[in-house]
Length: 330
Ligand code: BYC
Image (spheres, protein in one colour):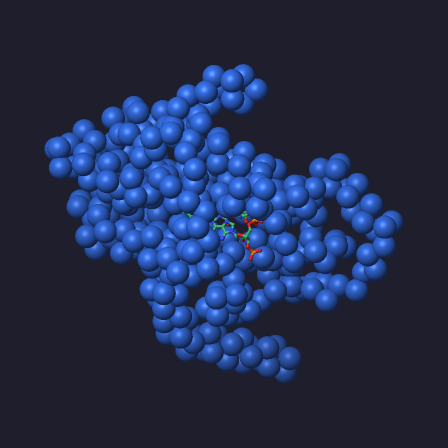
């Protein structure tokens, strides 16, 4: 999808004030920045970090749901889940390609994931012990992803913004199939409804953590907003998600596991919104730093996949080398 023959990772552009001002002028005029354009080194590294992390999240995000493919309760559910998990794999690949346009290789990004240097979304370090978790992930996790990613379709970096358009369309299907699954459980037996409620109780707070630390603790937001990589802050998106999701829970008869949740008519400039309880930021940082319930398993699974695939990468490289030699000889 994108050019691979790149680009200024070792950019020697002098970043004097005139250069930075000219760059900001392009950003303010809503011009897209493309791979071969001059850009500040910090703009490049912010994008490599964020897109790489996003790609890793999509790939690691296949694991909690993939766990249920063989146990889906009907053919219809199995087909939908298979398609969803494959979509996540596709998203990861677009995103690795988008990051490669900035001069980083997929091998390098993967090594950083496996060594723990690169992060992936905290949400995928929670287990999926029940079938209801598959619905809840679609409903809440993909729902949160859409809230975060629709604004990224307007990200100033062209390849990332364009990749996000298709990703968001697919995430939208994921959210709907998840909500429909939970809705069906809620209309089922008492046990099924209890299973849905238990799943919501476990995933609600981790879903709110997906949006990242509060604005006061977010290190990267100011610069990312200035450069129009991010269009909303972490707290703004989290609030939008709460306001959109609470009525969905009510509609299917589920209650949010938050005693402090209440409607506040003055919020959002008088449009109203929900006040919600305090997020456990200690838990968030524990998970981000590798000490969540599933961190070790997730990295172990990715390492196994990378090691098992070594022969494929070697074969592809050997084939490419042979082709190049034949072309050169001709
Ligand atoms: N988990 O300064 P901040 C999906 C890190 S996949 C882990 O606010 P930023 C899906 C952050 O990286 C969803 N780490 O950062 C897939 C930074 O650490 P470093 C993934 C987190 O970048 C399969 C530090 O905390 N979506 O949708 O301005 C199935 C300070 O944070 C998290 C994306 O990646 C977290 N939750 O804002 C279903 C979207 N939050 O890097 C669904 C693109 C923060 O300095 N990314 N950290 O070591 C973003 O929008 C932004 O990167 C974030 C964070 C809002 C996540």
